[in-house]
Length: 125
Image 1 (tube, rainbow, N blue to C red):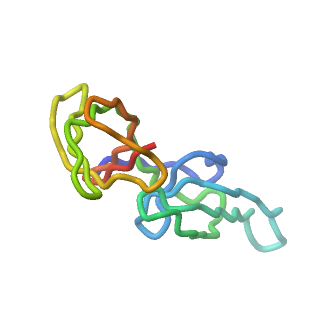
Image 2 (spheres, rainbow, N blue to C red):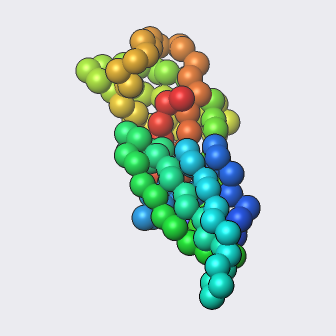
């Protein structure tokens, strides 16, 4: 798997983190002070990157380890479109794959797009 471990205290808003085994982007990060019998806690809220922005959260001690996905930003070229799907060629590896066309963009063959990739999941930016 393309991921690494880091401590909760090293997370920041806008970074990626695995919440419930789903790659998510952090939208809110807050900490509480240590109490009499415990350590400081952090509350992290995030939105799923590849599942339509579903909200998730977790609360852990700041010295706990969490998984951070390694999401890469790549360039691609649209080869063809049909229905709600498009054939895209990765401009680095020249691999072709099929992606769903997002509702908010118009694409045509020979357009260059930017997309996020994590394992077998891809999303147009």
